Image 1 (tube, rainbow, N blue to C red):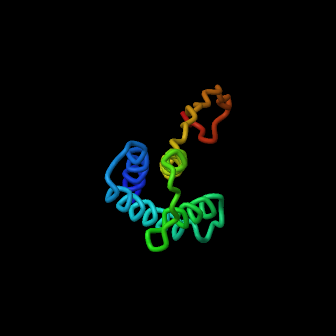
Image 2 (cartoon, helix red, strand yellow):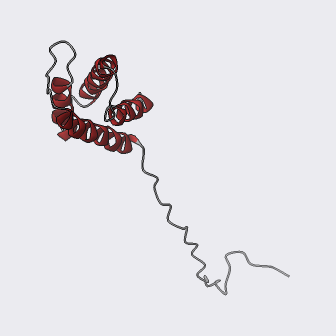
Length: 121
């Protein structure tokens, strides 16, 4: 699923150039499907991602589409949505923990002059 987010982001960036109408229908389906998957994943957290991808799902909804008849509006929307997908993908990658170097305690310990065991001659 993580790599489909990258595919959706790249498709959003490809939507900037002038392509046939069928591509934009495909883009609506792909982006709304990925937004819906992210909404289900983030439903319990009720975070920023839930709100953002709900709005993206509404905007890219293929069943009741919203039409902006001017291309510059869609260019801005496609760039923002692509960047949001990339940023969400970067939050899914686990952060590497920096290992602290092990500190070896080499204190000299005093050896008692008397031991518990006595040597009998």
